[in-house]
Each structure stands twice: as structure tokens, then as C-alpha cells.
Length: 90
Image (cartoon, rainbow, N blue to C red; front, side, top):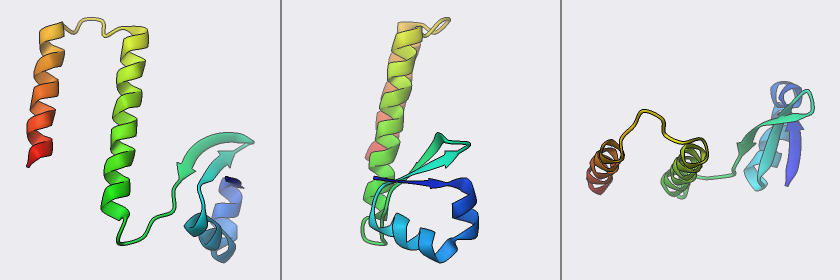
């Protein structure tokens, strides 16, 4: 896994494009990670997008479980889950 700065991303276009098309890359600003770039292509794009969305959803759920979903009833959460699952099946 490589690291690249925001500045390098903006100024070293050709070099950066080659790097991020080959391997996972962490984008940094002031030495701190701010993003993660995954290589993809036209064939894999839809799959990568769905998988990335699933990971972000799991992260959100874990965060809610850790901090607690204050003010949201269990029934409301279940209803939201069911609505999301209906949407996914389409």
C-alpha cells in the first residue's frame, strides 16, 4: 500500500495516475490519512462501488452501536433496514 499527499495528487498527475491504477493508495494531508483510493476499471467499477458502500454502511452501524442510537426506537431502525433491503432488490 502506498501513501500519496494531496499536493502530489494535484501536481504529479501522470505519476499519480499510474500509482493509483495499480494498488491501494492512502491519500494524506499534513501527514494524516484523509482518504483511501482503490484501483478499478470499467469491468469492476459497479462491483467495487457496491462493496465500498457495504463497508461504509457496516462502519456506520458499528459507530451507532458504539455510541448508541439515542432517540431512535428499535422499531424505527428495523423499518429503515427493511426499506433499504427492498431498495437493494430492485
